[in-house]
Image (cartoon, rainbow, N blue to C red; front, side, top):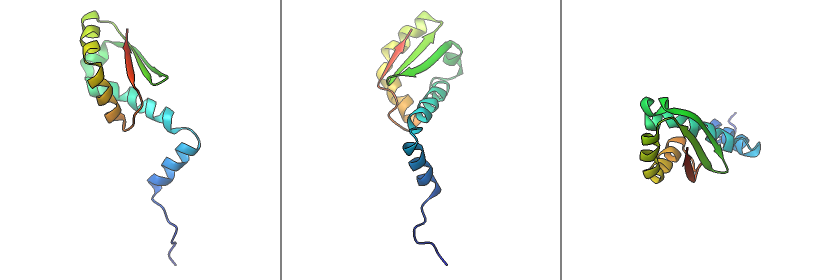
Length: 96
């Protein structure tokens, strides 16, 4: 006997996450974890604090020259991080 209303498990999980309002926090964690993947271990070693608030990624760096370099490429960095996270998570980056 076959079930005619069967759905893929991935679709059911996504529906559950949306229903329980867990999709956005999960995407934020994915994006924060993508920071080291997108920028590499060297830049990640200069990162002291990283968090997201109101679709803005806040990053605290210990290197002033690196901070200036990343400030110039903010738009590309936003696109790369969102692509890596798989969703439109952030709209802006504040680098301190």
